[in-house]
Image (cartoon, rainbow, N blue to C red; front, top):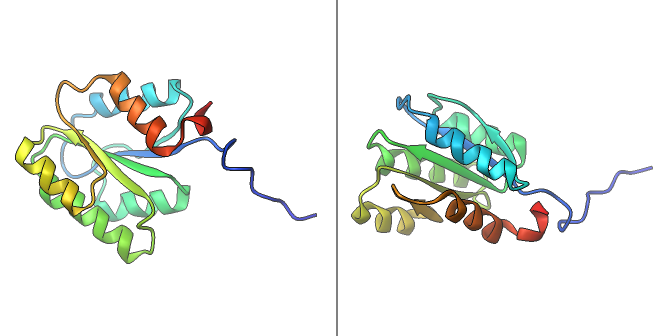
Length: 143
């Protein structure tokens, strides 16, 4: 008997979270990952010091809906675009990229134009981040 995929309304939202580059500060991404998990989202945290290629490969292998990147290093204008480029190159541009960190307002607009779906800046509440994920990827899927 052939297995069939579960209806999308019962599938949990799957988000991969990552720290890309040399930034070693991971408390924030762990807090966000836990808040998402506690809200019913399936979270795959890849850990520190990931390359864009490692993140994209993991996202494809894990069949995630979105990639949440935490960047505090100042390399956001290099690393976010590289992840988006690699997703397109791998025919996985349907995976939504979002993230946050210490990102100037002027760069937020530029990142959104490059294809980053949502950029969170300091002061964003956990409720706001969780609401974004549930609304963007389907609140019913995480129930």
